[in-house]
Length: 217
Ligand code: SAH
Image 1: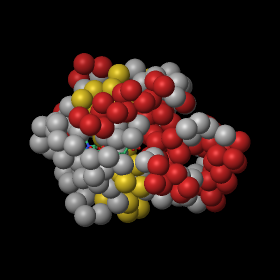
Image 2: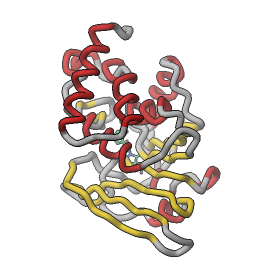
Image 3: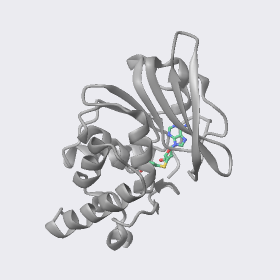
């Protein structure tokens, strides 16, 4: 499977749709225009890769809808050279979007099957995360903290406090919070002990699971 001008054209149409839905950040849109999403999907969904929809991937998980990826990426406001922690590597699509933007990406996945698959796949496409980690994202990754941005790509029934503590001052965390439906929430660290919080619309994510990392497929 390779990229092609046909797929490139489909991506440009997707970018137009995202623009119409309100995404403005040029770096985000350029990354969506560049990352070959069709290569991140199981073959059964290839024809639909550039529809603005989520699709199933391995281990009962999903690749997020492009609008959601764009919305979260835009809210992060991170630029080339900044350090971002992603919780929920999944297919690696969001990771690739951040890598394309020149961001130094650390990404954690708790499903071993997905972790292994994506760890092999991303470098093949030329996307080099700083580090992919197999583990429980609820705890974050203290070894590389503090981060300029933290992006959580699974729905958090409750707020993982450890993650807030790993934000740099001025850093931003974008996290969908809630059980059945989630409210997209932005936390900005305004001081050592202070955070500003802003909420956005409702989104729907697979759950952020708080138990230890899973080797089941
Ligand atoms: N960013 C991904 C979205 C995948 S769905 C993509 O673009 O494809 C969310 C992912 O979060 C799933 O792969 C799920 O296994 C993972 N996840 C859920 N709870 C987690 C946790 N506590 N730590 C790390 N990953 C987790």
